Length: 178
Ligand code: S3P
Image (tube, rainbow, N blue to C red; front, side, top):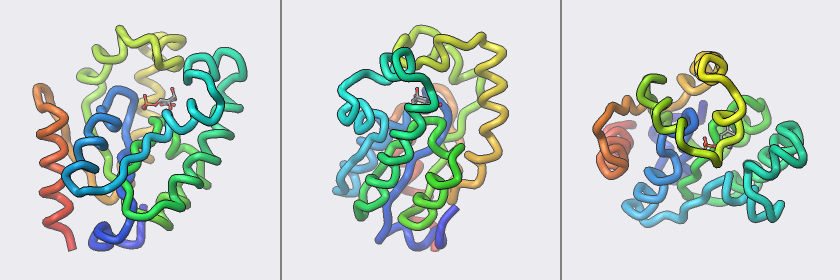
């Protein structure tokens, strides 16, 4: 998904993966460790629209959300050497994938669905996991896997790893790449 793993030092680091993977919290820790700035596209969308993600889906629908998401990914990709946590569906759009490829490397936080699902159950902030039946959310996961797997770095995550440990794992992968 990029110009090459070894280019990561001069480029943005994009965290990708399904809802509940910990992209935001791991991203914040990673940014701190690397002394980089941290961007979270969901928060940027909320700031731009002045509504929560849940309200945007409810009032304007997913299509509108995806339009704004693409604008925000373009804006994020214009920054340099940032750590960027992307929403779980951002990589579905070819323009977003191109922006990621041009400006950075993608890091996939890979979890088994069975470990992600319990985290989504009690979270009302994610419209897709709230509105869809469990079987539909799992279908979404399976449809997206192929895109996630194209990341430059695939980080296998397992319970009970903490965000700190996952950030350490990412650092080791980055440092070991050429
Ligand atoms: C979405 C994931 C969410 C958010 C929106 C849609 C998705 O972000 O962008 O609810 O399509 O998977 P997180 O992955 O941070 O939960």
